[in-house]
Each structure stands twice: as structure tokens, then as C-alpha cells.
Amino acid sequence: MMIKFTDGRVIRVMEEKLCGTAGDGEIIIDNRERGKSKMDTIIHETLHEVFEDMEEDDVSDAANNITEVLWAFGYRLRRGR
Ligand SMILES: [Zn+2]
Image (cartoon, protein in one colour):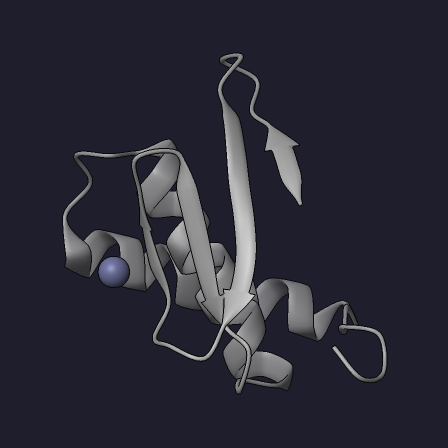
């Protein structure tokens, strides 16, 4: 799928059988992940793409905290995702 960011960049988002990565206009999510872990990875890799110079520890902390808040509000991936 293609996602348009607010800065106008169009980012390609895919699910593949490999660890999540981000960069060069592409976000890849590990298709073996499920549930809260997958939510965290989606947020984590998106943060890398939005804030390209953000330190890994800051990305991890932000993703973990955002995941906790969304999870507490009851957000979940649809069944089978
Ligand atoms: Zn990272």
C-alpha cells in the first residue's frame, strides 16, 4: 500500500517475512508479528521514516509509549492482520 505523509512524501508500506525496517521511502513490517508487538513495530518503523535522524532509543521509547496508550484505549488490528 502507498501512504502519503503530510510532508508530501509517498511511502510504500509492505508486509514481508523479515524484521521490520524503514528508510528510503519504504516501511516493511514483519508479517509474522501479531497483536501488540505488531502495533509497536508499525509505530516504530513509521517513526523512523518520519523522523529520520531520531535516535534508536528515542524511537523505541516513543513507540512503546504510543503502543501502550493505543492498546489501553482498545485499539487492535482486525482479525487475521
Ligand atoms: Zn529502530
